Image 1 (cartoon, rainbow, N blue to C red):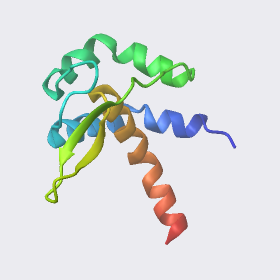
Image 2 (tube, rainbow, N blue to C red; image 1 turned 30 degrees about the vertical axis):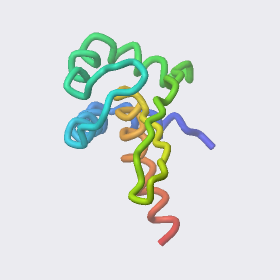
Image 3 (cartoon, rainbow, N blue to C red; image 1 turned 180 degrees about the horizontal axis):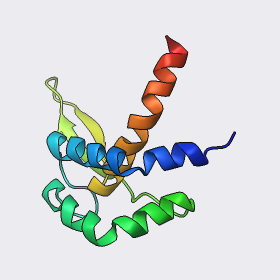
Image 4 (tube, one colour; image 1 turned 60 degrees about the vertical axis):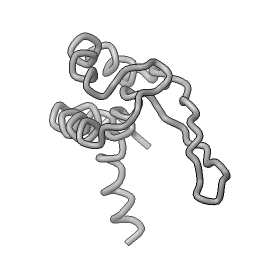
Length: 107
């Protein structure tokens, strides 16, 4: 299967802008790198071209996920994995392209 067209859709400016807005709207905690969602715009301005090229050439590697324990009402804890803001941005961009394809197939 030729995935170059999918990757170009994922890396389109429109799709990346929508992904950025969604990540900022969702807010969320910082990952292992400590970057807050409010710092994402500056990070992408400096590193966006590098990130796109790494994705295009399949050299991008996500960061480890930060583990957080959330207390449960019964006294236990639930483990939660928090990806970095950059990884959430990339995941969002990919999901925005793939979800409509899979939803159509499943429906």
